[in-house]
Image (cartoon, rainbow, N blue to C red; front, side):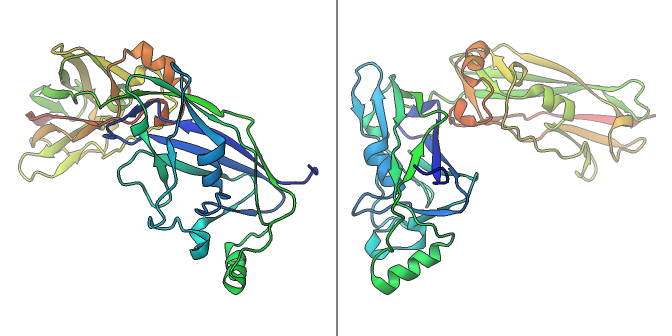
Amino acid sequence: MAVNDPTIDIHLQADRLCYISRETRFSLVVFLTLSSGRPVTIIRHEKDNNVGLADCLISKWIECIDIESGESMPVLESPNQAEGPMLATSNLGSASLMTLENNRRDYMTFTTATEPRGYEFTFGASTLKPDRSYTLRCTPSSLAWWSHSSKGEILSHFHSHNKLPAPETRPLRCHSSAQTTITFSTRSSHPTLPKVTVSLSCAPTFSLSATPLFSFTTTLTLYGPHAITALAERPTVIRLNSDIEILSAKSGERVAPDTIDIYDDGPWEQKDFLQLEPGVPYVEQRSLDATQMDCALVLGGEYVLQMVPVKWLWWSNDSVDEVMRYVGNERSYSALGQVLAIELTCDDERRFSAVE
């Protein structure tokens, strides 16, 4: 291989858990990073001759192994010819080609989703057994490629000559300097969705001079058969007071605090996870400082404290210590796995008045 020949570095990422019932999507993502002095174009998928990237991943490069039995399981599937942009070469469309740029991270996704996105391929969980562990292993080799930065040039040649232009004579080498072997586990179906309620209590008055601070309490209670650990990020929520709002009792207009959406894709710390036991209240003593917040409370006004809708996007029956062992420093929900979200319920409204 010449020094300046382009190469593709490949590594895999997948969700930790795959539910065979497909209640939540399991995804295997194949990341591609080109090392080249110029862009290159490859075939993304070509149904008839199996020369595209997706075809090589499906038929040659990626293997799924049952760790217990050593059996190889077919899990990656070619899309149907009628499925949107994945067309055979005889009907070549631009979506069948893929142009890679130097050092840009591109990807290809295989998923169990019942309605995959147009650019996704199928991960067939029906061949897997529940409560087993599997290894996904990628052994890449090489691809045909063109030194064209525009897919339009290749398409123009195809439409003029009814065939693709001749690829470069040297193969495009694919290799891996990172993770090409990963492990995931299976479950037959998603565990029963637990219920978490929140109750509120607060002081009868809110001092606009913050002497004393306005105190209130949030109490979380789990109803379900087992303890759960949730990615609740309570320290951040409490610091920003992102789960509450204060309304004017007269107009119903929100007057405080500022509306804040929290989205954090990691890395997470142990404090971000909250473990709840069934029927055991988790009590948070909290406060608001009128001098440290932008609020429209007025002396003598009557107000209502209430919760805003809150969802916990991830939870598990594992303990916090078990969760921390597999989440590590990952910045992706794939380290946790896709689950059905818990929506916290709160019917409480607490009234108070503003004083000096």
